[in-house]
Amino acid sequence: MDVETVISRVLGQIRPTEEERAFVRELMDELREIAEGTIGELGLEVRPYFVGSLAKDTYLAGDHDVDMFLAFPLETPLEQLREKGLELGRAIAGRLDSHEIAYAEHPYVRATHRGVKVDLVPCYDVKSWRDVRTAVDRSILHTEWVNANLGGRNDEVRLLKRFLKGINAYGSEIYVRGFSGYLAEILVIKYGSFLEVLRRADFMLRQKVIDPGNWLKMEPEIAMKTLKREVEEDRPLIVLDPVDPRRNVAANLSWEKCGRLYFKARDFLKEPSLEFFFPPESVPGNYTDELRRKGTHLLTIIFERPGLVDDVLLPQLEKSAKGFGKALKREGFGVLGWDVGRSRGRAFLLLELERIERGRVRIRPGPEFFTERALEFYAKNDRVWIEGKRLYAEKGITENVVDVVQGLLEKNQIPLGKNLREAVKEADVLVDYVPLELEREAYLFLRRERKRIK
Image (cartoon, rainbow, N blue to C red; front, side):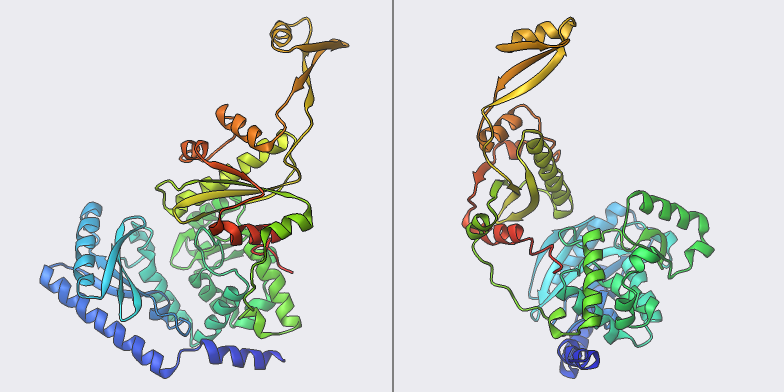
């Protein structure tokens, strides 16, 4: 199948129909009317804005999530914005089908209406990057910039978004670390089309810095400060936000997702296929079969999830998994990989080990025998001898990895996320077994399915 045919067929599935567009327009008009009426009743000076893919007409067929931002005047104190913003969001949502309170930088209301998710988010009514006070304020400027620069290439963005979804590289959330919708829009604007983005998918390796707002010329000092910070953080790509020179649009993008686009783009251009956009859903196998095939072992550490939002929880889980990995390697257990996650109110760490038992003794080198520390070493160990100037001892060690883990935790010898230490100490430590809800996670981890590019 040639590339034109593939693109035509994909567009037939991802481009909203006229009926769908009419529904979206009607929904947005209804929500705007409800919001403006509620604002008037409460006597607030607030302007409602639609932002995101619906407002830019870059949404995919069937994806109608609405983002309505409630913009308060700049002179509004932050605490008042949070208080009144939540009050207003609740009042608007009270006229919709259902709602709940969600939390980001400040509380907002997540509602549903006519089967569609509706986020009601308070922000400041900013006109430029110099007005930005909270992380969400830029969204209004993002929408305005994309609409002013996209130039009718909406379907090109849809193609890129669907491709990124298909190769598991879409979404800037902490659990994904892929390409955001806004970044996809910028790339299409920068390179002109979906195919040109793929042809230039090595831009992360060659160009490294993309500056669609020309900030390096207009605000060189601020832009260079941003570049320096992001280079020090070893970001794979730096895209200076065209509406704010202080921000890298690709700050959450991981090297892994960059590499995934790099290889998959080459594969698609070489042999176009619908499967890049709509991969067949794989049926997970049995994780125990994978363990037998590989001859390795699975260590699972599962505990009650602390009350942390994902953006805080995930980095701490990753730090803890790395801490376990280093400690177990130091103790003689080969660690082949790790994964983390959360499920049903619990958090978990998975580590693949070469073995779960080790030798009974270890030769422990000590200090030179004529030093002060030598007497302490001599007193603490039973079987001690001298080789040259140095003392050595034969130390009995625990054989099973579970005992080793528990001993390391008791001695605080594993670096853990600062909010996880107490929870991890109460964790269940399992070997070659996981609870039912983690069987799929264990299989995907052992197969490296989420990381595989071939």
